Image 1 (cartoon, rainbow, N blue to C red):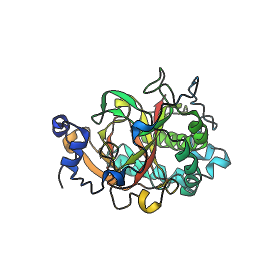
Image 2 (cartoon, helix red, strand yellow):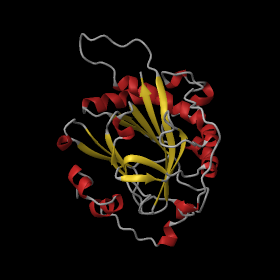
Image 3 (cartoon, rainbow, N blue to C red):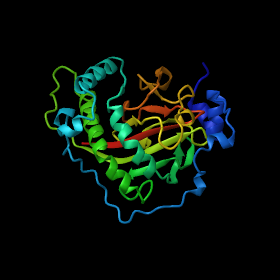
Image 4 (cartoon, one colour):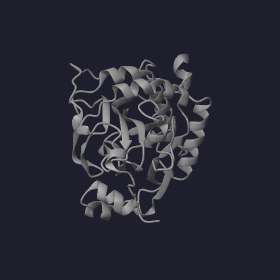
Length: 311
């Protein structure tokens, strides 16, 4: 199989979409009318939601485990999740890997109940990143729920969408906290075990909708937050059945999923692993782990991304 992305090809490629086509061999068989199932990005007016105050105040009050969540939020989480994360981390640490995928960590039926409101409130915001994200400087396929201090990358996050997703964010926060605690537990003899609880703070989160448009179909090889966040979580959302026929909106059989390069600090020794993630699957990612959202060539793919700071 041809190499997906290397540092050499990344530097040589003149644009993200050409890199995608050349290195991944993606063949767009759809006409512009077929892939443009939404209004083009330029047709979206800018929206402002008034004065913004960072929330980052989970209802669960820094739950250290899923079991510490309120019962009404635990009902949205997969049964046995605590043990599954612990065992999954152990297997990954034996392989010297710093990421974990948990299938249907959030119950798909709960996400189905949220998606009509998410699709209604979703309003892509154009943002500029210094140096670009995976060679994409102008990014306009995401709606931001919370942003970093100082208004990075935008100053007008969608507060109605944030309010709708707070219970979901609380669930993922607790999952991430438990995963992070297990991932960073000291296994060396003679070293003391950390007793004090971790303080986990969301520093940014957003919902992304990928399409078959050449500039919207993937987010190529990158590290989250330019390597300046302590970890992140990526939640796969349901296939869209609310804004169009599932036969049109589904990306099944046309790419998608996430890809990791992990297992070693030396790039040439890293393993490349693809996961065909679907609704409810959560990827837990440690600081500066290379990964990408693989391209789709049909339909749409939705995901929620959360960046964390841990102390």
